[in-house]
Image 1 (cartoon, one colour):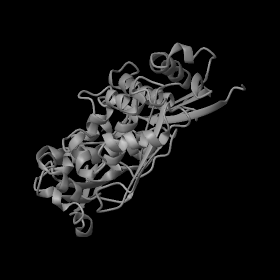
Image 2: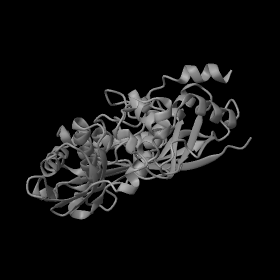
Image 3: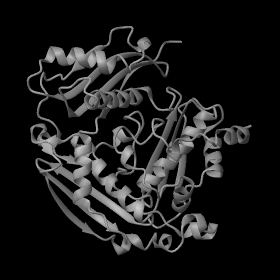
Length: 399
C-alpha cells in the first residue's frame, strides 16, 4: 500500500500579540462581571491600536466593574509597561462604549435570569433557547497527551515558552509580541517529522539577528520539540524579515476574535461559529464549542475513534440543536452514526444544560484567552470540557 504523505501547519501567538491583547481584555472584563454577577450577559469587543484601547459591546449586569482600571492592569501584566515597547498600560487612552443586551436577543434566553441552571427542571432547561444561530465544531485526536493535533499543540507550547523566556529574562532582550508556526509531515495520518518551525519574536533594536536565532533555538525550540521530530534537521526560520522591533498595537491594530483558529484546532479541522472571548456562556459560539470538544475528547479517550469531529448547529431562541453530526475520518471502531447516537444520549447540548454540566458561569476565561481554549491541561483547575470522565461510560455503551 503506497504511503500517504502530506504537510500540515498550525500557528500560535503570544499574549503580547495585539489580537490576543484584545481577547484577554474582553475575557478579563467577562471574568470580572461573572465574579460578582454569574448571571450577567456580556458581549464585549475590544480594539487596540497605538496608544488606545476601545471597549465596546452589550453588557447587562447589576454589578460595577472599573473597566479602564481593569484594562490597564491586563495590559501591564502582559508586559506593555514602557512606551519604547510601542504600548504602555499607564499612559494609553481607554474608551468605553457599552450598551445593554438587545431585547430581541434577550427574549430567547431571559428565563435564565429567573432560575439558575442547577435548580431547573428538565422542562425549564428546555425553555432556554440558544443565544444565536450557527454551527460549532468540536474535535479530538490521539496525537498528543491533551488529544489535540500535534501541530497546534507544539505551536502553543512554543508560544508559551517564548513568553516564559521573556518574563523570566532568560532571553532578556525580548518584548511581548511574538508568533510561532509548526509544519509537520504526516504519513498515513500520523506525524513523523517536523518540516518547518517559524518563530517571530519582538526584540530590542540593538540585538543582532544571529544572536536572536541562536537564543531562540537553544532556549525555546530545543526544550519543546521532541528529539524524534527533529532528527531530519527541519528548516528553522527565526524573524524571517530579519528584524522585529516594532510590534504589538503600535505595529498592528488588534481586535477581539481574530485568532479563532489559534483558539481551537490550528486549522486541522473547520472552525464554525464565531469567536469565544468576551462572550458569556449563554452564547452558544462559546458553550456549544466547549461541549462539542468535551464530547469529541471523550469519544477518542474511550477508544471509539482515533479522530473525532463533531458539528452541532443551533437556531436562535431554540434549546435543542437542529443537528449533531460526527466525522471520524475512517478511524472509528463503530459506525459514525452510532457514535452520533451515543453523543446525543450521553451529552446534553441544550444551552442551559451545557452551562450547568460544564460549570460555565464562573470566572475562568482570561487564562484561556491566549494559548488556546482546547487542550489546556496546563491549567489548574482543569477546564470542565477537558475532562475524560465519560470515556468509560461511552466505551460500555458502545459494546
